[in-house]
Figure 1 (cartoon, rainbow, N blue to C red):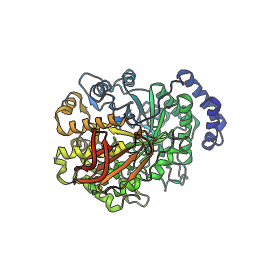
Figure 2: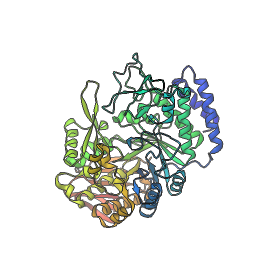
Figure 3: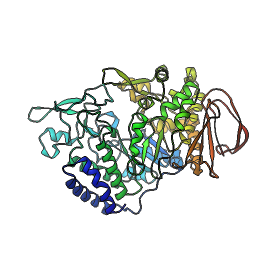
Figure 4: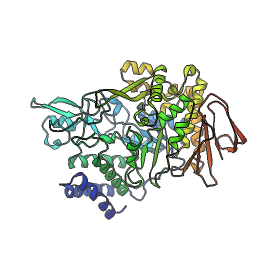
Length: 561
C-alpha cells in the first residue's frame, strides 16, 4: 500500500468515527505514520502464515529459573526443547501491570522489570516471530494517564468515559458481575465515576477523542518497531461506547480495527492483526470485514467448546456440522485456531450451536473434574455461564479417566489432531503443549478461577518431566511431531479449502487441499472404541504406514494421503 492508497483507505473510516473532525484526525494520523515509515524498513515486511506456521501462547514468565530473567528462561527452554516445531510466540501482556495477570497495563511502552527488558524480547525475536498483546480497551487505575488526569492534568482530558446520567447503559453487554462504573477521588477531593468494563482496576479508554486514537496508534506502531510481527487486539469488541446500544461491535469499533489494518499495511506490510472477541460465532467473524480490510486473523472461539463436546458426548455430529460451514476466508485472512488459552473455555460462542442440555453437561463435567464455571450477568438480572476454568486436557477426561495419564494424553493428542487439521493457523497454549494438569491449589489460594490454568513452571523441573513424566512427555512429543509433519504439507496452508466427510459419527474427518496432489484426509476418533473405516486407504503421513482400510483405536488419529 502506497501513501495515496493509504490516504484513500483511512479517509472514510475517520469520517465515520470523527464526523466533525475527520480532516484534523487525518492530518495528524498521517504525520504519525510518516514518522514510523522513516524508521521501519517497509520493504522487508513479514511473511504471511503458511502450513508451517504454529503459534505458542504463553506468559513471559510462564517458565522461571532462579537467577535468570523469565524472558531469558522462556527463550532457553523453547530453543532447546521445542525448537522449530513452533514458529511464533504470543507473549501475553509483558508490561508493568497491577492486576488480571498483566491485563491492567500501567505503561504500554515498558517491559515489566521482573520479566526482563526489551533486549530479552529482541533476543527471543531472533528465534521466533513474536505476537504482542495490545490491551487497547483499558488501562490500569495506576496508569499515569489516569492518575495524572485525576490530579488535574488536562493533557488527559477525554481519555476516559465519565458517568453521564443521560447515557443509557441498560443494554450494555457485560462480561463481569462487577459494577460498570467505579468511583475515584480527584486531587481536589471531588469524585470521578468512570467506565470499568472488567474491574475497578481496569479503566476503559475513551476512543471518541482524536488524542486517544493517536496515542493508541502510536503504541501499536511502537510494538511493530520493537519487532512484533503480529498484534493481538484484546477484548476489542468493547472499544466504543454509544448510549442505548450494547456497546459491542459498534461500527466505530470496526472502523478503528480497519484503520489499524490500513496503518499496518502501509507502515509494515505482512504484519498481522488478530482480534479476540469471546462472543457468538457470527459476531466474532464479523471482524474479518470483507476479508481484506479488517483482521488478518480472528480467534476461532467456537472450536474449544465443540471439540470438548465431541469427546464428552462421543459423537462428532455437531462439530462436523459446524465445521462444514467453515471455508477459507481470503488470500490475506484466516482463522486463529486454539483449544486453550490463558482464559477459560469460552461458552458464549457455543450459544445456538450446542443445546442448553449439552452446555450444562460440559459445565457439570468441568466441575466434576475439579474446575470452575465463571458467570456473566444478563440484562434481566439472571446469570449464564461465560467460561469454564480448567486445564483443557483435564476437561477432556470422562469419569475416572482423569486418573489415567495415558488416556488423558491420548485424548489430548487427538484433540490437537483436530486443531491442527482444520483451516486456519494452529495456536497451542503452553500448558497444553507441556501436558499440564489443572493448578487447583493456585486457583484456590488466589481466589481467581483463571489461575487454574496459569501456573508458572520451574524450567529445570519442566525439562526433567518432559523426559520422564508419562503425561507430559507423551503430549509434548506428540504435538511437536504433529506440527513438524504439518509444516511439510501444503494441504495445511491456512488458505487451502477443507471438506468435512461423514465417515462415522465417532470420528471427525476433514479433507484438506482437495484436488491437489497433496490432498490429505485427517481422521480423529473421539471415543474409547475401535472404529473400522474399510473405505479409507493411503499413507498416514504421521507414521509413514500404508493402510488398506483404516482401524482407529480409542482416541486414535491418522492423516491419510
